[in-house]
Image 1 (cartoon, protein in one colour):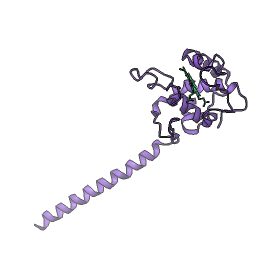
Image 2: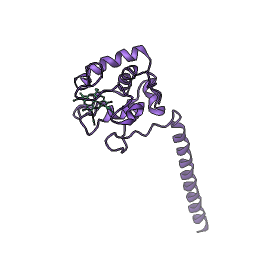
Image 3: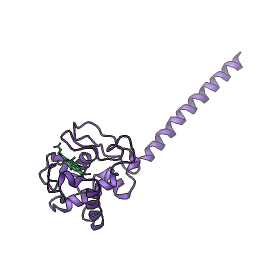
Image 4: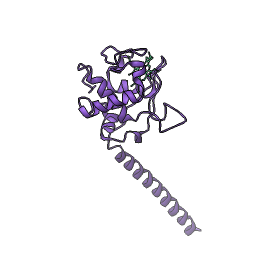
Length: 177
Ligand code: HEC
């Protein structure tokens, strides 16, 4: 009888030990996985509510840097600026904002005075392009532009290239805010 009790308590101790050991190593490994820095808390331009964007979509060095710091390293980069201008045409942004983004049916995108003041910052403008507005600007982010086709739409890297082109037209916006 006594031996059996001992066995039970040994097993119980072993289980408890195993359990706490597991949770220790679990928290250690999750601490290690955020070594790249936490992702910015994106919000919708529509209402300021949380905007979830899958981390794996930030798949280039520039996009990764932006996702944690809000910096757009393409600003001032001639290659990215040229690509951004092409994307602006390919995605028909020109139809509403004009060939040089100076405004047409849609507003001027040169700033520094934007309809949405936050668009003076990289993060703010990114959110507006990615998820759209309630006033006639559709979501252009990957998977949102055409919900039936998840491959359709701009990647984060492409949004940053477009921004680099837009910022290049207004030297007051350094792109690092
Ligand atoms: C069908 C027309 C249309 C297209 C296409 C379009 N936009 Fe817009 N866009 C608008 C309108 C209208 C607004 C104003 C929205 C509002 O007031 O809520 C706007 C607003 C914006 C703003 C916010 C400007 C501010 O002053 O805050 C940005 C940035 C923007 N668009 C970027 C783009 C980009 C980049 C593309 C292409 C990928 C694009 N738009 C395509 C119509 C369009």
